[in-house]
Image (cartoon, rainbow, N blue to C red; front, side, top):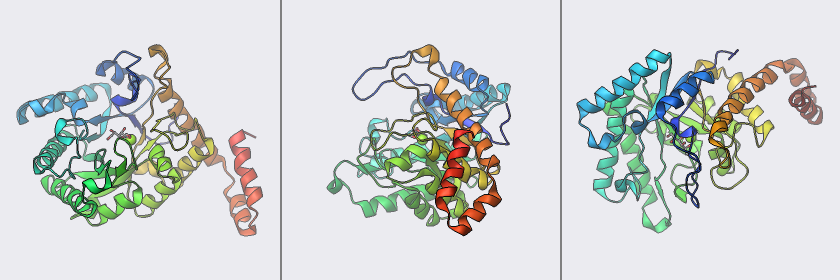
Length: 344
Ligand code: GLO
Ligand code: MG
């Protein structure tokens, strides 16, 4: 398979049991080892990890036990010729993080969050990656008056700085999302994430991760969000997927809802040589109604849609596009793009 220099990843959560807020799981859990095999078979290069995907129940383990398990996972990846793209602290499921992690009002909850994130930094190191993704899932509130948003912003900055100081080689990519699980999220867009990063103690080590669906949920265009981060050299990774309007986070297969929106993400990434910068993560989930035997096809579809769109992007007549821009003939430019997407 020609991958045009790109490397691709997904996380264990992208082979999913299909539970939603109103119903139980509909597919059996797939053992991690089988997910790794699927990743390999589908032609992906890297696995994304939550800290406890790599080291289950890490809250119960000693530092040396954490190290041993993380190194064991790294060895398993090595065997298969795979790598870990990043490790993300799962700061949204523990009882201590019910009201937020770094922005909780309770100092004990904040201390737990920082301690857990430091363990995650250790796991990153043992797993051979310098990248930590911070999806700030519960950093927000359901009730605006329940937290001080200015103070919360300072607390997020302090947490980022504490992690940068804890591990001088660590890089952080902040993954913003405007809602879900929280109603009112404090870092809803790439602009917010970038602003926080620029104020950090070592801004060069703080970037962002754009997820397509999260941009759409914020009423923004993912390609523009990526462009904004790319303009500052701050796009560390992407979570490509798709989203059918302003609803719950759907994690639909890349390009399956709005092919032109997908095309523009690929175009922006390719025009900016993203293959030299980071990996292409596919944060997609199979539809709830899919039977287990076919519930990995969303990963295949997303990867192949990306690759086909690379071909479309690279086939564009750049000179013609420049002429049409200069002539302000946008209808003709529109037609050029549509013809490319339609295949003739
Ligand atoms: C959920 C997020 C989630 C994160 C993952 C890595 O909406 O997109 O999938 O990307 O947990 O932190
Ligand atoms: Mg994501």
